[in-house]
Image (cartoon, rainbow, N blue to C red; front, side, top):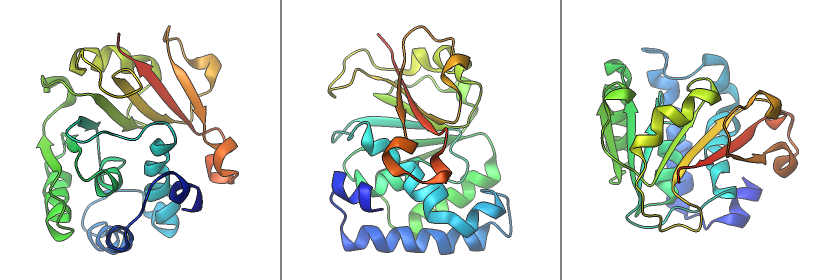
Length: 203
């Protein structure tokens, strides 16, 4: 968390929520596979820090609206919502059992800027400043999936678009316009080897 700490201000209550988030996931993961059981052993690295790595690319502005598509166990949406308290995060997943647990999680942690949506992604018509996701589908499908969910007017220093956490190789990306942030060059941790943030502006 040291590098993240240099980029954003953490409050003690934020750190307590991250600690409690692991306990909650450990408990509920016995009932439903929210996240990989193996990843619980490195929960903070695999889920908290990895989600917050997006901060190396952008800091979300107050009142902006972000969709976390295929959120699963609430990543990267929930960790980011804890930091960006005045940003609205819409966590979308089609699996009702996961949605019910996510609703419990945000209630337990008293997170007020998260909205849980139980629906298929293609049914979402609302527009957002950014769509964020990780390992949802082939990177080359992402643009067409979400190009109609992005607001035209941009308020951030980056144009509105898609932010995708993935391990795809550059020569496998066929999208015409995209930008890559290599996470291994930032964190120097084997976990991040080949992991990248792909940013696709929607113009």
